[in-house]
Length: 234
Image (cartoon, rainbow, N blue to C red; front, side):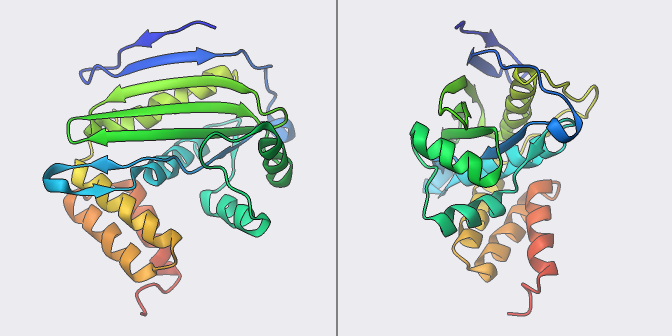
């Protein structure tokens, strides 16, 4: 396996990858299915402001991958429901037996696991792609950049996985915008409260994220989904 170092744009995004080639995948009914577990980790902003950014990164990566042709991605909350029903966990370093069990249960060939750590000036992701049938680690990626460039990091990670799966990345897209650290923290808190069933507080934090950064599409998507469910009638 080879180590790689790449730089992306002004942000000087550092990507170090270790990969194991995967068999080419066909399109249509045979297209690969991927599930992204909740990443672990916190982001510490200024004045001690912090949030469970791992869940936010997982949510953003699922959205990014879902927009790629030739790949099916299990929705985050559907995955959580299945894991809860079966009393399984995908946190930490999953063993081969659990990976195989979860993969068969949800119909996924590949599972993604990761850890995120960050402060106001720097963020690091350690992410691995696992064969759900064998539990073998097929690819490892390490990305480092400023927390404001989180969206660029997520896009780059999706590009790397798509390349390994022999799938074509988008030919053209707008440059990823920088997201203020406090907006990411508020979004992370919203995801966490939504997971805990506290819809009111989830909506509160999604709205705060959008107040800080109105173009935060992931926060807007989450807020719209809750409001359509009648979240404001509390």
